[in-house]
Length: 327
Image (cartoon, rainbow, N blue to C red):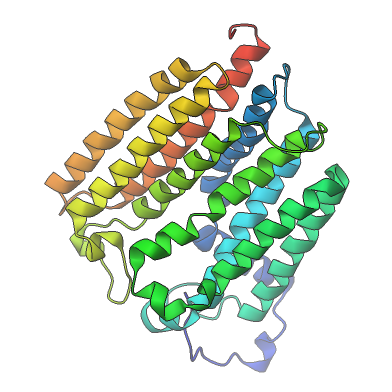
């Protein structure tokens, strides 16, 4: 979040050289929006949205590059907008408790991030028009929900006192983003609505969002920070890990149902069950050895779980269908 009262820069620093500008944005990216970590999972997410939609409507072959590219870039920009929204709404708390972050320490100004937000909107709009103007209503709906989130649905204090409600309402954005990414396939294909099986994929994305959200806010006791709300501090480490595993289990069940709609139920189960077992082992070890096992373990496994989910419902069945191995 952000720190108030940053030191005033000397006049000669008011217009830093290009290299300094480049470095500070690179630093911001590494700390707050790490592309190296995000890109693999987001590529699997986007390909799953387009590929699943294509398989569900009975189309063979390989997803079009334009559809896949627009789904990927648009989804990336949605995630960036979520990060930017956090910078604004968490400004006061960041300034008080997390002054080490880029905006509080003066590396990037909120005004600059507002221009980045506007740039995201403009690029998403151009991409939608390039692929199909009929994407615009879904794009507008996703923007609208994202804006409501950025305003905490106009009840910030009420939500802040209810961590579970906060998470449940904010995770709705994940199905919206997936629906838009999938629409990059079925709308250009001339469909007025998505296939029925896509409903299960929206549920998968809702609970996958919960896996990621809970996973990134589970920490060992020594990692907890004053003023930083984590699920391990609010619910206790044991309950937080159980909630994380419960969300993962629900995701696996719904993913199996979604996989059946594209004739890949057993394949989905064969990929996700070992991943679920591995996650359970990691959770048990984290609880048993909390003083030496960092919360990063849970966060990393959460990312690997979502990657496995999207691969099992996107790239793997598409490849098998492409090579004739899937009936």
